[in-house]
Length: 82
Image (cartoon, rainbow, N blue to C red; front, side, top):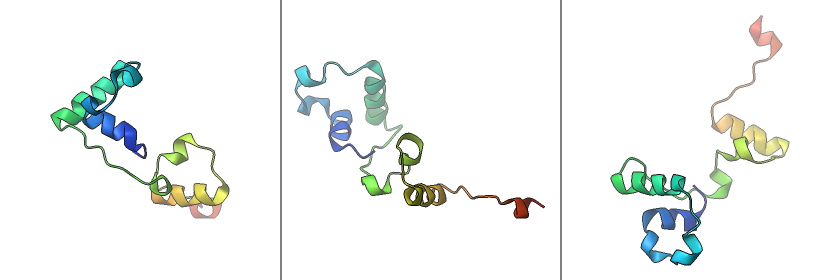
């Protein structure tokens, strides 16, 4: 996750102003419960290392190729199939 305020809110909602976070829906409360219960661990990942960008952001060709390699996808050429 590359959003430090979201990580802080999930780990300790008491630190945040209730008026600013009262709009948060039940999915976030579910995540908070999972963090509290130890089912998931939230860690900060720098934007440059965020592999999920390949799924949800428009990328230039070089960045796309870099992330594609990092997630283990390979290009299969027609020659490799024969």
